[in-house]
Length: 232
Image 1 (spheres, rainbow, N blue to C red):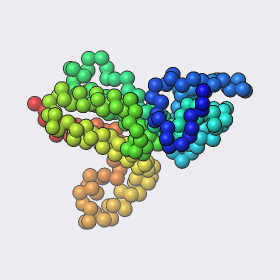
Image 2: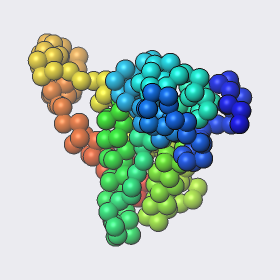
Image 3: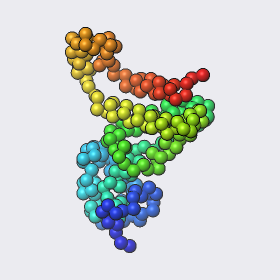
Image 4: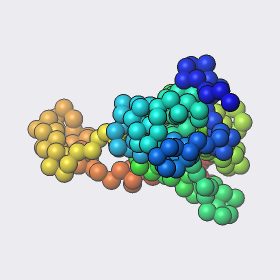
């Protein structure tokens, strides 16, 4: 069996995890597999971010030679694809909720999506530019099915799906990067108070002191869903 090359001419992500044979390492490390490579890549991304994922560093964590990774993946880009898709797995809403409460089902999935990305902050920045794997596509399929069942017209379905996609990613990136301490927020609000003539509305609302990120996410999602399917 010839080893897979590491160039750009690969066959794409190996979404079916068991399809690649494992190689037992000489130092008694567990055999390499797609599952081990992806799980270790996620650990490395969590610890060091996107720039920290290098194939040699990944191989070192696995106790393997860098070239042995290419029996399982074509290149680093494929590792990114597989790692991203793995952290976005969704087991579905509670049984029966989809039919009985379409809004509850969407809230459950999108809050889970946001929580998954906040748990792995690198994922939000990768999602817009990576291949869409089966876990991501399954979320989009479920979202489309729920919206369609709730009455969103076929002609409006794509716009509705992408609007919610944009909302989740935008909210996640904002939360992950706008992480000020209480003292920093108080200082920013105090500076704003001195400029109240110029910014009266946000100063009055005490915008820069509002750190209820979860509440803001839910309220904003309510606004979006009301626009897509007005309450009866």
